[in-house]
Length: 161
Image (cartoon, rainbow, N blue to C red):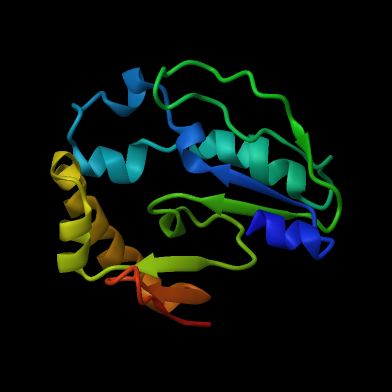
C-alpha cells in the first residue's frame, strides 16, 4: 500500500506495532500466556503516542520513530527517525488497536469468524484467542471501523467501506 501511495504522490510510512511492545520484563509479568496482559499490557501505548502520533499532530515536527524495540531480541532498535512531510500518511498495523482510541483518520479491520480465527491461529498462540474474543465484545470492530474486510477465506476476501 505504501508504494501505491508514493506513486500517487503521497509520501507514507508503515509502522508495525510489534516494534512498540513493552519490554518482556513488563509485558510478561503475569506469565507468557496471559490473555488479559496480551490485551491490555503488551503494547507500549505511551511510546506510540510520544514517538508516532505526537510528531504528526499539527504542532509536531513530523519526525516519527518507526520502531522502538526489537520484538525478538527485546532490545532497543536504535532506528533513526523518519521525516514524514505534511500531507504524508501513516499506515499503522497490528492486532487489537481499536480499543486504544488512537487518533486514526481511517480504520481498516480484517474480520475473521471465531472458527476461522481459531483455524488460522497457530496452536502455540491459541492462548491469545480469549483476548480476541474480549476485543470483539468490547470494541465491536465490525461496527466501528471505516473499512471492514471479511477474510475467513483469504482467497476470497469481501469488504465494505
